[in-house]
Length: 257
Image 1 (cartoon, helix red, strand yellow):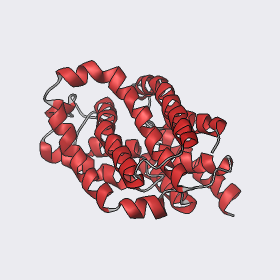
Image 2: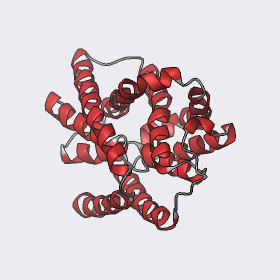
Image 3: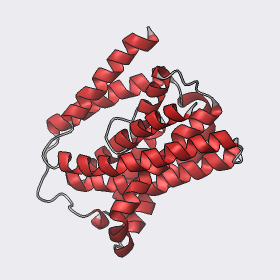
């Protein structure tokens, strides 16, 4: 992977991380288009730069996260199921799921259909929670359990978390924000685990590529988070569902056939 490819992939990551379209899936597909081979380093790159995007949430919501002491226990409760499943299935995720185009495309397609299905039947009610800190620990863990499905590339961590939030009774905007917050420990743990497993064994050139990708994802995500929140206040997830289905079909015709 060269620096230009790293910049392009970092923009893809920053834009797609918080949208319900699967950043990992888009990184896998973008790597295919750029002819970037799915080496162990590239798989690590695709995990680690996601933390760069997540740091945008820390910058944008840092004050709220520091001041709201009731929110963090709910975030940690939601993080636990994903941490257990992610750690237990690390080898399967790293060596089989990541970089698997067929798995990614099927997950994008099915996820798009699920989004359309949810939008058809979901109706926000006055009693739905407006503050994530008012979640019960049981409901927070249900969200985390749903999020754990996103270990499959193409599912979308953001989409899984948002749909989990809607399922347990969060308002749409609240579910989106909670998906932002839950990403912090989730991706910090994923990055830490990957670095530990790889024993930090990257070359100086690879560290340079990682740095470019990390910073690029962070800067792009700063813009994407603000846009997504404004968008979701006035629109449904239908456009994202249709987009996922379209991408899955187009890439299937271009790459798999």
